Length: 292
Picture 1: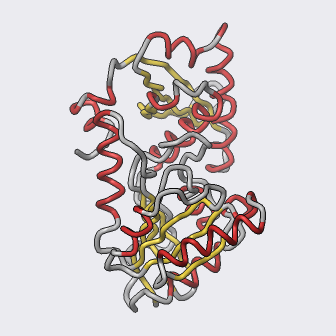
Picture 2: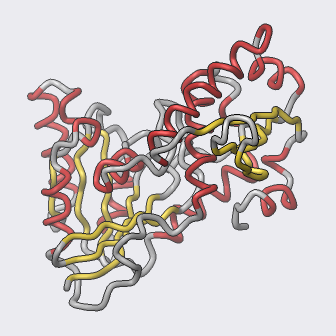
């Protein structure tokens, strides 16, 4: 069987996590229109009858702010070293104004597949012009036109990747979809609801930590306890909202998503805590699972 590792690499908001979720047919990571949604290198495991492909999703490339931002860039750059295929994810809706990144991608030792994503959101003429610009910069790459949000082009991407994979044994059991514990998926689902419901200035400071779980003695439902961590008291007030309405909305949306994922009734107990400047605190970053 064909087996190997490939890295999803590219600028923030290009759609890397959406591609991974689409290929797996399951949401395992937070997605949102806000930059820097992905914070970890996450391995999603795709299986079919003749292959196992481990997709490494990476934080989006951006101008880093603070220690966390620097760590995210390091995570993305380290993930592309030694992979069987580098998938360079490009947002088709964004004009190419700086060729530097594409030229750097062209220097990689791994085969390159360009996932030209969001083609459904750009006029045809503009999309073709940008596609040809990338083809000029990356003449040795293979190109796949995609719309991950509408699940278009996913199988074409799989086929393009398979061409470059060696024969080998599976790395993971067939029923394993991610290299992270279930608590990670729950925390990502809660964080996504925070990202999608809160103001622009708050989401970057949010970290979600699962503290414990239990079965309710009253409802018999599965209960997940989680801390929503922010950096300032003012941010805590925003997350909670007037009379607790915002926190209630986040909880309701997250319960629905996690319940669908687990195929059972789920209750969330959410607590908002202030940890000042945690994004620049090395010990807190380590505690939250970020590698220095």
